[in-house]
Image 1 (cartoon, rainbow, N blue to C red):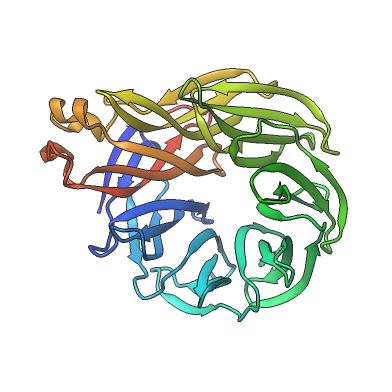
Image 2 (spheres, rainbow, N blue to C red):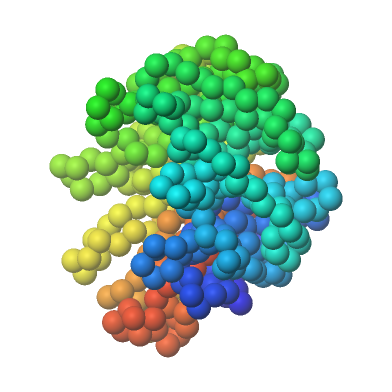
Length: 401
């Protein structure tokens, strides 16, 4: 069942306990909004050792109340990426599975209760991992994959896919001769696609961001690098209302033991317009509001009682990249505030925000994980009762709780 904290009618912090005793660690990887304003969440449930993972599916109403949750325990997966609601109200989920010693894309169709109605994982000769998916027309999506070729070179591969019929419309490889890995794919307002990737050096010891603009048939139109700090580890990109690109990457300041996130505004051709550095947040991604304000989400690491603690955090940023507001979860927020004071002070919950979307009513939905006791009011002082639960945060249209 879900435990809920409401800041007001339709905003707040929500967490949902795991529906399986065999898989106790959950992390939401994607969410989407249904026509009736329900939210559908896709999570990756893992066992205690993280050696086995399965899909987690849940539906909540627009106020965060849990309606359906399901652990698909008989379907092991390597990773999960996205979910889409089809016209017939079926749900399509995308990810990767192990296929012997290599990896292969995996696609499944779920019913409204989370039961798998059909699934497919095509046989591959060389390891292929699905990295991201974007909607591209009615019941069509474009998959961004990283595929290894016969020379052991990593290439970005794009597939336009009919999610209703499971038919491939076209396939295109962005072959550069270098090792490149897909990170994100988005559809642009001009009908084309933008692919964000990582370009590796010859010995795979370092990488840098690269952007591809791709036409509606999967053909590359241009490719540009993005100059960022060398030690970045997460990145995302979105398009604003004027066609500019909002790029973010997070990186660590090792000599200070802190994290920073760089936000860069690029024009429609990938040239830098401006940038800003947001301190004390390890960003995982961004959501753009209708007014082009940016919600940067992720977490911050701090030391509490000589222990490193990760706390979910989001930052509201103006369209000219100035910080307007920041919220980092603390022991004053539930579920920490429900725990005995000494337990909350010594062993606060650990959280991270990993994904987010803009809702039709202007609110912002963020999701991720929270490591917490199953019963906060009776929390064990040694932390032996803690598990990773699904986390949902609903912000109002102003980008605040």
